Image 1 (cartoon, rainbow, N blue to C red):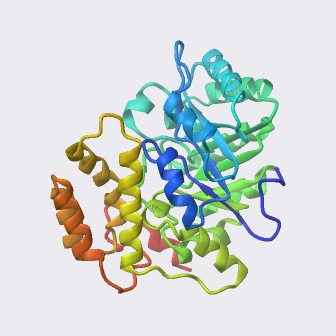
Image 2 (image 1 turned 120 degrees about the vertical axis):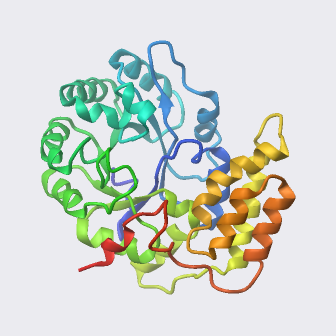
Length: 343
């Protein structure tokens, strides 16, 4: 794994996010500094599934020049092994297993975070995949399903299998995204496992990233929503780790990012419809607007046409004021991050 990890600082991953970390998003975020390592949105795996052609494009046309892992989600062992072998025919750095998705529809199928209610099944899946994958095999998990007291038992299962990296979203499945993370649990994994451990969850700016890394002693950080909101975050953290000055974008810089994202997503949309595209952008802007004047989010959420959308963005971002470094503490999509800075 040393070829993936910088020698002089913690490694930085872009978290896999369904309907976000696709080819157009990689094209947009990479010029802003990008991550050291990428992970695809998950390939849904079941008895008669085949790897999604759209997700495969983010691998086969990877524009970043950096390693990308293919993530799978599912609970059918035979299908997972079959799909892993199919994915290994593509230029990937390895295979990642999703044990963390908290979406109710996923958990109901005993996949993603839902598997954490069935640890013997997790044990069987890890064993089968480790035997079938000759290259890097990594896992992204949560701390447990109901309570983080479940985590030590889960760690014992991870320790049985020679996984290459464990990325930990520092909440349980039931906590979803609505609580502070538990860096002490991530630190326990660092102390227990021989593989590198990556800390994920609630990294919204440089300060929270540095604090999470310090409290967890993880080998790196995995950033998702915070990178949607601030695509400079990876380069800012690199500067912080090196003791260098940190670039601070202004609102007009952010406006340029939103415009690029709008255009790149549109360019990759079949049967493009302007009104539907505005709805698609709203999902992204739910993160971007955090920390700004509440009217910005209000107007974006109510935008129906491209004209509505772009005018809201221009009115709030077409200026030289510094972009807010962090979301507001009361943010509905970034919850409890301030506790990383306590103590």
